[in-house]
Image (tube, rainbow, N blue to C red; front, side, top):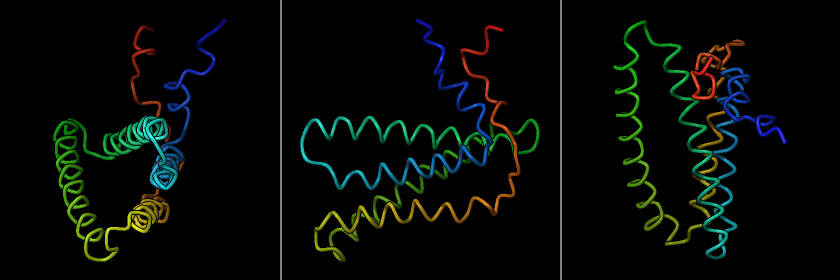
Amino acid sequence: MDYRRFDLPIFFSRLGLRHLLNLSIFLGTMSSTSYLLLSGEVSAAVLYFCSGFAAMVSLVATLTLAAERCPSRSEGFAFAILLSIINFATTVADLVGSFIYDHVFTRNLAPLILVSATCTAFAFVLVPLLHLGETRGASICWPSQQAN
């Protein structure tokens, strides 16, 4: 049996950067919305795995975009700044979400999940503003491609 038929690194490198960003936004929106289906330990484990996969696709898409758009030889600096922004935004989102959960939705989680999914889906509107065209994500050097 050929296990390389569905090689994820090759699949993602064949996607254009715009399509990879749209896929990451879609997966993020779906993983946020799926928290409405949380019902027990098994669903929590499956949801946690799927959310982690969506987060990694999003991180790869974001870092690929940053690497292709930053000036040459400043990729490390751009990576550090981007991760600092991600860390700051995560902290602020946690604080704002906690405040909204306590004071606006009176400890009702479902509306907060929908607000989170809506904010993630709003990024679809922002992707065309990047003017990406048909750039390919093939510049990513995946471990399975390094042997050649």
